[in-house]
Length: 140
Image 1 (cartoon, rainbow, N blue to C red):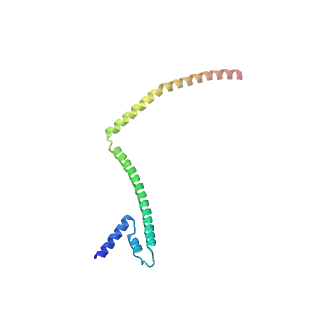
Image 2: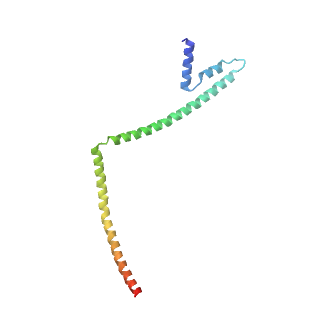
Image 3: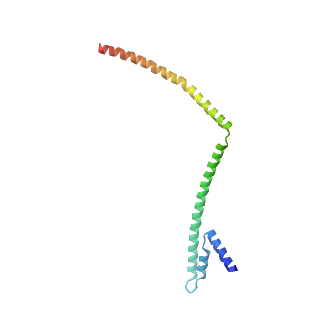
């Protein structure tokens, strides 16, 4: 390979890496000066740089989006790993804590439930007696 082809290769790699078409800029600068003025060349270079800026901004936005998605997936993976690493003893301890909590709740609710049942039992006995008395008067 001669030095010219190596330079062309390096220019191509650099262009693709930074998103700027260096060959196009070089071509814009090397045009025949009779056909284009310096201001036109500068305008062409500015246009190419603006296009490159848009490509870079789009790429950076996509990278930031992927970074956020990666962080979320990383957190989910860490949580899954922690759950997977819980051994049998930890799971049993957790179950015991949950059962104790449920037992406390059940013990608190039992007196209330019994009281409500007694009230309804008395109310139904009174209502039955009243209805029986009223119906016996109506039918007789």
